[in-house]
Image (cartoon, rainbow, N blue to C red; front, side, top):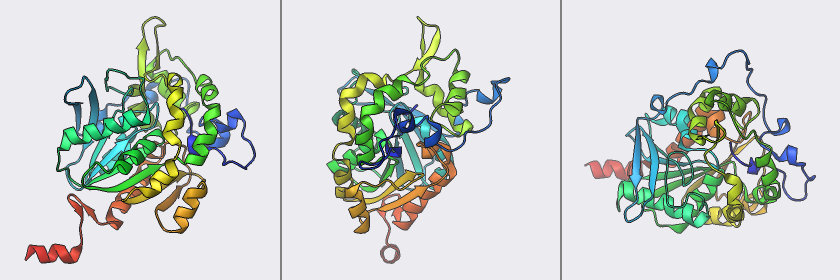
Length: 346
């Protein structure tokens, strides 16, 4: 469902990709798909969020008509606040949440225009508005004294996470995890996005068929994750008597450049511990290459996955997040220094 596997495209100076090769849906861009059987749709039946998250909340932003849908799991450890990519939903992190909730408090929100969130302008996906939305949700949920927070953002959500961190308005923010988005490849891919979106399957006779398409011809590789996340990315079209996409990404083109322009420098400037997770290959642009050589962030390349790492390989994704938290000693209230903790306890 993601419009572009933005970070899977080639960097400027490499061989020019065709539109087909640029798509998250092309065979060349993704690992082999799971075996499927057309005679039965039972394996594509939707799964309920409650098997993975503990609670679903409606977060109403004071003095506005905006209400954001939020899923939470776990109660121990720091808050891992997850932001999905364009066309996805908070349930993109369902399988990951179920694997992390014993050691972290996982929160995944539906961004504006996605999932069950409702706002006065669902088509305003400008980076400024999305950033303000996330800050408003965090403040509404936690007030002026939030617990330790690690921001995790996938694709478009990665850009939002970077902008939120760069604003330095969230107290007790201790980590930033950006998933499979790099400015250089993202900016180069924008010229292809409308055609990629148009080439997707547009209408589905049932939710099961949409789930089936997502793993046979779409962006996902994990059937279980698709069964949880795909239903929340759809809406029923009464006039056509079929299902179509909840988020009309093709109508938001004027905002695309703003999502990614200047992203690398902004990421490097964020005053928190940072990790960049990339799918398949190392595709750093010049600014990130220099930044990595200077030790400004950690990078991990995750093999055998498509663009949605958190959906395709949730156990490995969760392991990387938890290792990041452990390595940087981020506890429920912030960075924990063993020597000082022992001293305070006496």
